[in-house]
Length: 296
Image (cartoon, rainbow, N blue to C red; front, side):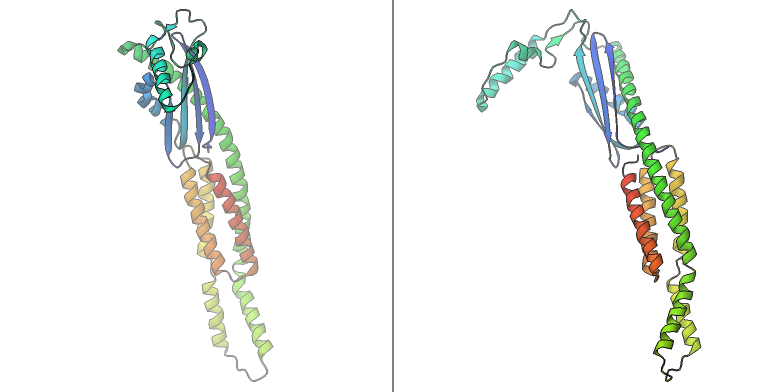
């Protein structure tokens, strides 16, 4: 089933005195690009987080936001003196740039990592890191569940719209297939009428040359091969919409190929009705291309 590349998911976990929130957003991208924003001490888990995202998402830019706060019941939280000194020193250094002002106690307490908890701080031993990594991966996967659900819903709408437009193109294809064989015969009649209108009795029409002219026109305007390839591309596009996994790039390629075949038909077809069908088909293909740009 087709998936959209846009989506959003979130989750919250409580672990060792911390409340950790996860937000995952995805938008269109040619490849799978994953960007993390999280506390510095958790960057050691970035590789495993990235693998978790890429194992579930094949295409799109994915922004992962992980924020950490002390739980409300964490009574043993204490002041992080080193961090307080660092913030105060930074505020003092800013005065050299003409930035005046002072930090209040409320300002300082609202800054990240001012309060720490002996029981809730991230342990640096192997067992502690493993426990945190497992807990964080669980929260990340829960947020990814929500993201994928949204991408699935959006993908279903995209697939339905694309299928509707493919049906219209298939109807136009049937009309063109019926019209194509009649083009040489109509040309023969028009040419005969034009010769008769110009004939004042002095023209000697060579029927052999006349027949060769009609045959050459029939060869130049023959679009059977293009219509056959176009039908094949339409069938492949339909199958792709129900295929598991990323299909957006393949669908984009098929749309390019269909546009190429339609352009060739338009350049060959010396027939007003066929040209009108070509214009309609190109309009539908352009709308499909816009929708396909959102498909994973």
